[in-house]
Figure 1 (tube, rainbow, N blue to C red):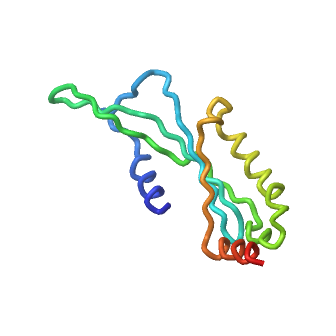
Figure 2 (tube, rainbow, N blue to C red):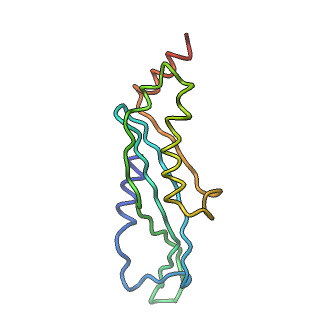
Figure 3 (tube, rainbow, N blue to C red):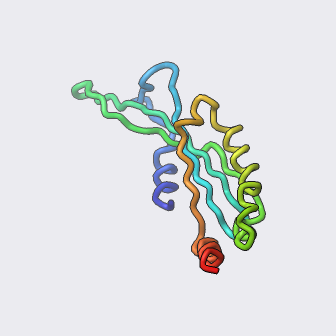
Length: 132
């Protein structure tokens, strides 16, 4: 995840004049990371578009990606509070998923990946409950 965040910072820089859009109506792709921590679940929504770098030498075009985090919001409490009542997890995630649906265009819902990540402590609580 650190790699992804570092790359998004690197790729999110404003393009110089040597970058051109592949078309006038750029279509964005979206990806979502749900970061389940002990104090809350953070929703991180990324969007990206393909750009082309136009070389001055031979007019060849190399595809690049312009990525930006467009949403960061935290939903307390942490999902670890549901470790001993996993039947409450769908209700816990309802507002989280509703936020994602509201901030990703409907036409992109079926193609937007959602990754749920959690700290080791959160995962160990769920593992402990499953072993009972």
